[in-house]
Length: 338
Image (tube, helix red, strand yellow):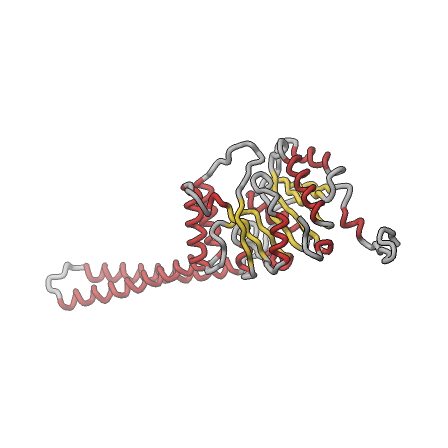
């Protein structure tokens, strides 16, 4: 499979977080490196080790002398899996960057993803077939429902079955790397750019040989976090509910006065007690509304905060990109360096 004209000028980065991958990471690296070397002149493989407890780091370091363009960044402590993707994106320097779940995403679609990018797509989303066709599991049904609701709540154009297999151009990455909450928003953050995207379908694989455990509690917590960090509308809804509660208490106060005027034999003290409760609840709901607005503004203007620490990094002994720097070729003798 050949690539369109201009491929040699394109630096492709493939980034993956890994953890406790000693049993399968070598095969992944060799297959990925062979594919990239056959298709592209310039590429890099960026791995972020998410505080592995086995021999993953030592194994990768032993492979770096023979597998070129592999960069390894080791985190001092474990962070959420999807946050590690953003760490990898921050280290990548490619003109286009492909995020890939090393444990479950295939590498074959990579070349086609680059083709889509060259045709004008700033973002390419891989859509998992187990979330788009056939009989969906309960977990996948709930996942699809969440992304559908997310689109309606935020107004962002995000495919409902978008997975970790994605391509971003440098312009997209630059657009969201300044986002203060980027480490928590990886599943949805690219949609905020509003740039053109394309999609394709693919089937997941399992390099680990271990069945993937589904954690509904963790997924639910992530869903709430994505909604609240992606949009201020939930807080604005709280403000509106608080003001509505205050308005109801005003109506209740009017009703209390009318009862006292037109109804005979009203219990002694009922009117004053009801007015007192109504006034207090009115003040309480107004305070909640004001506080909610201030919290919304704090969320929008949230300050930067450190999220991770790279304890160690290593690179392949052979970096093709460096070999090409400051090299001029004789037009009459292309193989001769001047």
